[in-house]
Length: 90
Image 1: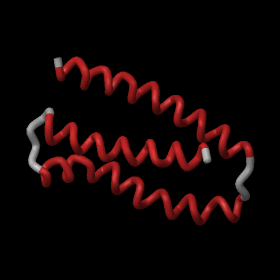
Image 2 (image 1 turned 120 degrees about the horizontal axis):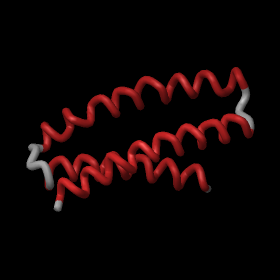
Image 3 (image 1 turned 90 degrees about the horizontal axis):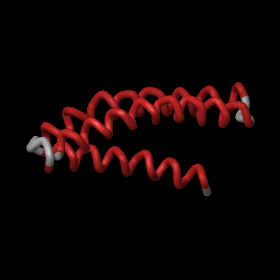
Image 4 (image 1 turned 60 degrees about the vertical axis):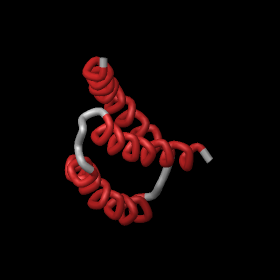
């Protein structure tokens, strides 16, 4: 259940980023989509890789702990990015 909620939150972030580009930055629909291509490309590459690696290596608690640590470090960086977006909106 927790994994499903976290995954949903990640994809909702993608949806809101496109709305941000359209409503705040004044991009067209196509322009917003082009700005999201790097993130979508990374997801398209790494999701199948993870689906291939985890059954062979084994999914355990350490993957969840390591992933949580990486997400925390990334979240700190995104927190600064979101702060800059909020400052830009004011």
